[in-house]
Image (tube, rainbow, N blue to C red; front, side, top):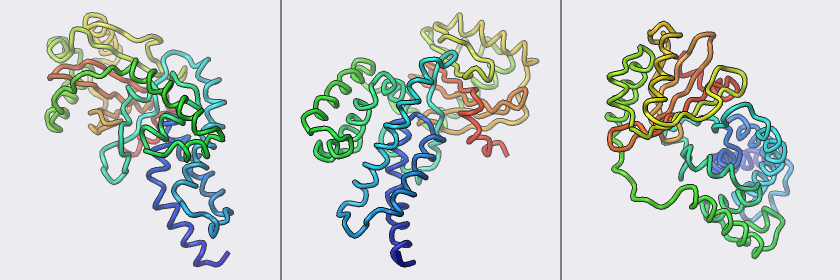
Length: 297
């Protein structure tokens, strides 16, 4: 392989990389695993017969999909014994140049977790990334009709978990930041009056510590229960803000990343509807937040 051919191959991979990462992240729910998959895909791409490949992006998407399917076999087994609630690894969505086009919401990623690996791949490739069923069949080593059925089953399951409802008005960035920072300050200092105003009656709080950091083992439902939990956490934390914290957007949601007691990097993202917080997603598993530590540097 000449240097020029290698450079051309690298350029082609870098051009396709944002799309490949977007697919791998949705398949695996992990930034770290998606990055590892892309490294492996690049190594395989380097030895591929490029002169025989007509559709570079399609070829790379097939490689990436197959690597993700192999990864999911072991990931599913690990998640069956995962301590407490599992949440996807937060992905930073502040920068539009990341090109994480389409939905990377926590709600979608949790819905994808209910699908089999093949259903997930067929649904993502066809419904999210607009691949033909012929291309999906090539990636999954199944017939186009089998892939059509996989995607249809997956679509029904996802729609059942995410029913079509009128979308609430888009949250203004400044409003989202104001509400999120107000929640963070109130939750850390035990300001229950502010929390009561901010939390919806049916608010839900989900925490993921992965058995490596303190977190609620089950979701907390309802304003009263969430308030009690936050009050208790504030007392244990001395009712003060951590020294290092920063507002950002994670998975399209307004969020705060903070360094907590013991050096734990915590990510807290909020679903906000009509000015009230309806869902709180807190990730404390250090394996899932270490890639966010640079935000606090």
